[in-house]
Image (cartoon, rainbow, N blue to C red; front, top):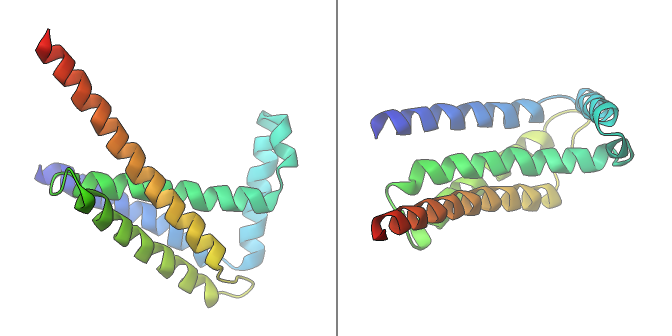
Length: 149
């Protein structure tokens, strides 16, 4: 159990370093990275080239925070496996991380903080937590079926 929690904490720290590390990049550098990623995707999957940089940036926000939600859900799962606390505690930590992320961007040249991005981040966190809980439910049902046979 301690090893799982330690691993989870390390992964959360790495995830936050990625999120907040991207937030400290100046606006021009961040846009170049987004455009480069979009070009790479466009070569692999041609119809994605038409998506546009802004949508890629919003999807990146959602994805980074969905991963954070999965990890936070995993960290707090053992203490409050069921019920409201099993969702609320990791969600609140994720909301705090989203607020810190947008606060960082407020002070970086060429970047701006956005309430819409906070909501996208919160949606990602909640999706990650829900996916984790759905996975645990599926595993639990599968174990119950095996025990009944």
